[in-house]
Image (cartoon, rainbow, N blue to C red):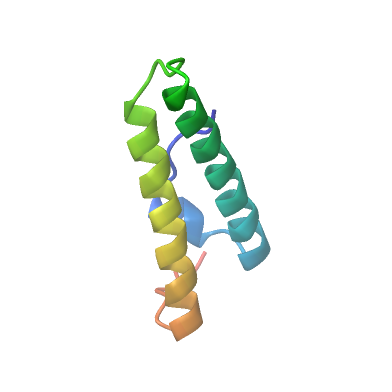
Length: 74
């Protein structure tokens, strides 16, 4: 299980890493939904966190697409 990711942490990733993170989160969401459907899910709050992570990643990808990303210099 991956912990929830902050937007600042996501901004440090390049596009390929972001896509990998998105794939990972979607896979986890699928597994959580499957567990919920079969009555095996212990932590229902995790569903909400994973959905928010996915939204956060999509938002960042869209910002980059539009060129409005706030670049934090290291």
